Amino acid sequence: MTLIDDSAAQAAAKAKYAQTQQTYTPKRSSVQDMDLDAFLNLMLTELQNQDPLDPMDNQEMLNTMGQIREISASDKLTATLDSVLLGQNVSTSAGLIGKEVEGLTDAGRRVTGEVLQVSINDGAPVLELAVETSAEAGSAEGKIDPGTYRYEIVWETEDGVFSVQTEVDTEDLGDDFQGSIQLRNLPQLDAKVPRKVYRTDGNGDPRLVGTLPNGTSSGFTDAKATAELGSETLTGPRSIFAYAESIKVKLSNVSGIQRLVN
Image (cartoon, rainbow, N blue to C red; front, side, top):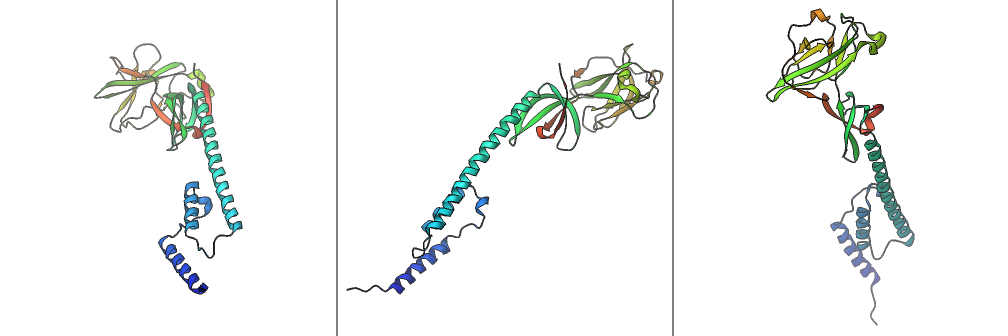
């Protein structure tokens, strides 16, 4: 009869197990921080390299399988909810095309404009707004008589002469009107490109109100009486843009819908 030395066999097994443990070191991370594939790979490696004399007990195996099921269910639920949310947001964004909305850009600039189109960036809808130059009552007193005025902001580059227009009826400004008009959302250009502001009440060609030497300024205040306008008039061909600029705003940064554009 051949006698088996249990102590020698156990020592050999433990030595082999220790060697396998030196060649594989599991990543230290909580189960909740892993995705399903990483968890399964780690578990299979652990089973392959476990101590044959001290294997994982049944309860520990059941607990591990339960964790796998929880992770799988969580991954599938999260993916499903993300898809549903994206679909809902895309539908909402598409419904805003043609409407005027107010929102914040990533730089913190508050803008109002008509939604031209919608794109998806990093899994989130982004609205492209056509921001128009607008006119409102200025905060300072001025000499502009009540009436209806059309403003035209003009600039010239090597590609030609361009402009945007806006019209304002001082009656619409109510009691806030004190003889001055504030222009907002002027077209943003290179700092070295000057812009000229012209005004007309409908009688004759627009006359020069003033010049903005810095192409990046977004506002201009007009407080001049008609008699004080410059002698330079706006004539000649030019390309008139429908809006001042195109601005992108995330759907999550939209704060309100202004009106439906006809």
